[in-house]
Amino acid sequence: MHFGGVTIKCLLKSMIVATLPKAAIQEWKTDSNNPGHTITNPGHSYNEALKRHNRLKTRLQQFPDVMKWLNEVENPSLHFIDMRYCCSEPDDANYKRWLNAYQSLRGWLLKQTTQL
Image (tube, rainbow, N blue to C red):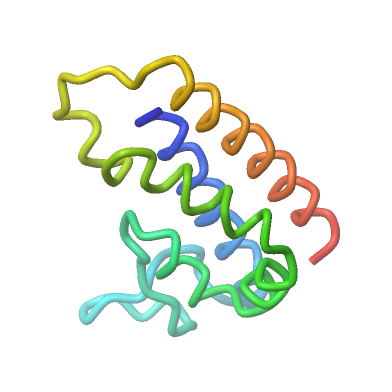
C-alpha cells in the first residue's frame, strides 16, 4: 500500500512535468533554481500535486468516484508515506478496498495522460 501510494505520487508528478513549457528545464522551481517556470515540488501530497495541474484537478472534480479512489490510496488507514513505519497489516476487506481504488485510480490517471 505504501509503494502503491508512491506510484500514484510519481505518476501525478510526471503528469505535472509533462505540462511544463517546451523551453523550460524539467526540474522543480526552488529559491536557488529557476528552471524557466514557477512549478514547485508538491512533496508527498496528492492535493498539492493537483494544485499544480489545473486541467487534471478540474477533470478529477467531475468524477466523484475518482476523488474517493484518490483519498483511499493516499490515506488507506494513515498517509501512505507514514505506512513505511507502520507495523500493522490491514485486514482483507480493507486491503481489497484499497487495491480496487489503486487499480481504478491508476487506470484513470493513465488514461488522462493521453487526453490532457
